[in-house]
Image: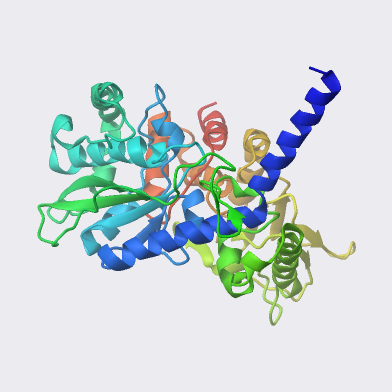
Length: 449
């Protein structure tokens, strides 16, 4: 075949692929999948809260009491694991209060059920059952037969004692999160588009149902052209690669503007998204101080560790002008954010705000943190007064700094990776956290060197 023709066909296939998974097609697919979730919830499980599994699941649940974070990679074949970094213990109280939960997720991988739901959560359920009720793994470990072979199921089952032994050091902390008398056995169930059975519960079962719903139908890209758009399975996955700054939160805050989406073309949709995203940026950057209050965060995003230590999320894309009339309840504010810009008169000095050009969810920044920690900790130690640590998301770099601050006064005595992990698990009482592995490695390097 003519090489030039081959090249033309290749380019045509690429063009068709990108048209099939355009932002318009993705958002219309998300809308369709959300309708499926809402129908299942309304008709069968209205008493159970919907919990989106980050990050893809957030696109399919407009309102929720919390999120879960079970990674599909912890369930990938031959890579099965139980993560002490993603214990998801905050779910246990919600499960008890509601006698069960729905966990929502999806996948782009051409599967009926993502690995997060079919394997990662079943591993978690079995380990939690062992911790709380001392149940046998063989009695509580279940995977969906539709997507997990008996061979793989049995191989994971064989690994569970090893996973359990890795967390025995922390059993007291995990058990302290819940009243063992209140928590019944957890039992997994799966629902997906086209499934043959919908399990029904009376509320009197001797277990808490963990109902996992895969939002999307199984289709290859471009196969399913319906109702004026091309369906995209798992359309919400990896949104930073396609959304042009649109997040699930911004999407649902502006959902009324997408009512006519089916009648817009791709260019119209991209223009609409750019307008919405730019409006959100302008809202955040327009007013960040009130009555000279030194504040560039939302109070709802700030969490207390103890009387002296607080952490949270900074408002993004802002420029703050410091004035000597500014005041703050914090004596020190450590900012871990490359986009924050502090303007100050060159003739004036301030010793409250300290900026480090690092970003959460950035592996390079997480690695650089180990070299910045000595300076950061010295700043905190100079006063030992009320200190606020801020980063991009409030759950990565700021957590690494907080763990180091908690160990300021022990002169690095009796420290180990396990003791550092215990500090992290204790912080899970405060909120859901997700520090990168490289962040925790930087903490270990600083504290154990």
